Length: 227
Image (cartoon, rainbow, N blue to C red; front, top):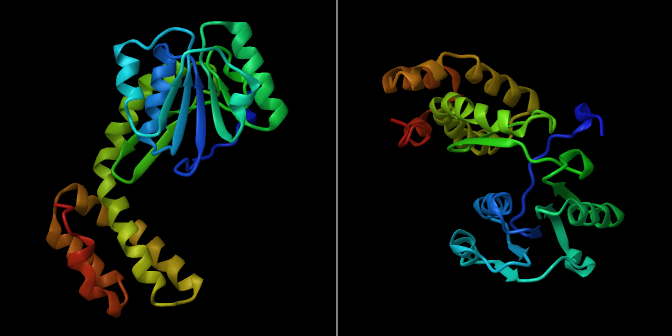
């Protein structure tokens, strides 16, 4: 696959079932990431009994473990599959079976031979940023993840504020153009700097100037716990 052809996408797996084949270090990491994202159910397969680290993850709600190899029927109802065994032939077979059924598959030993890759993700509050090298160097993407998290952390307050503001603005039933201009004016204002400096008074002044009159009384709510 042309590495520039990947389509970036965030998946909601809260109502989905996934499959992880392989319970080694990489498989454990994939399972942990699914659980952190609130996946509804995960089936984990491995021919070896689980070690202590895997067992801790298997104890989480929604996880089922079977000590056996992969069978095509394991794909039934799966939204996303990780082929993470230590056997290249087994991973290739899993990826091919997923392709035949139109199921997203991440083949960990040869990412470009699967149908999707998993980027390094950095999170801070409501902010999530994904970084990918197109499968060329996942280790490098993970290395840069720390720098990305450091950049996101001080900006999480702005994202939280805008998340609170949006439903309040939409409830005014203004036209789309007005809403767009309001959000842009806030994004381009010095509000971000005031939040980074911990200057509540400046934030209150900026919002008082930019918000429509019906929302100015909601400023304390918008700034709640941001300082």
